[in-house]
Length: 396
Image: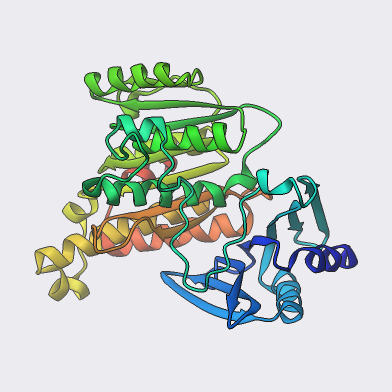
């Protein structure tokens, strides 16, 4: 299979390449994703590597042969997944924990017609930011929600919302390998609000990627739910529905593949995460909001000099809340990361918890996470709701 991997890279690391994405890192704390694309510099085609490590991004350019060797080395030591998008083909490379390589390669047509099937390479060195939902191309729900004009231009006052929607779709793009293409994918969006991201998720997964999806949006506001259902009907989104209800009380599903909870206030996030775990959801995407619970509880004599400053205590409490949530998801058999949702200058609270179910289940990693959470909550004298929901019989 190493020979087939080398053949794939030799066939695609050329001027017809759109992009290569390396993901599913073998170790935490290092780069979580690498994107590779061709760039034209001084009339020479090079290949630019963009490395995403925490909140930092690094760039480096390589010649073709060096890039191929670099990718092979990265897949041997740093990543377990590689997605290739080329003018003539698309491919996914998966590497098991035992080192077995699986390559799924599909042609998308000959070079004369393939441009209709895949996006064209963009080789400008400092190119304009590429969005999944492109500027200048009208999307009905973005027009109705006031983000775009009928001509597809972005309304200036809504440009941050446009960027946020596309950033969210990048997170969806990253977790696609965890979703089945063979059966209906069931998704619940808790606290959907005006549902910008719910509509975007349906449009991207169903209209662009061709997944068979059923998405339910849940929110407390009756007028918002009514309007969202009217819009879903207008667009013919027959597998997108909106319900009025409380997250903690929701019992309308037995099996869910992905749970999304965006800005569910305070402990509403915890109830959404607990339900996701009980459903054994493959993917969880959560942007918590208004984390007040821990701020009311936290106490530690050694940190009293820090906690006397209200704003500092509030921010530390919010970060601890989300770190504990991520660790609790780890204890339930998920690989969890905390990522930046949109640029931090917009709000200090827009962190996203992304959790993907581990194929091997819980194991030693889960037990370690549970012990770490227990020690931390005891040290800080806090009783997080998610911990009580997941471990109801254990003292916190």
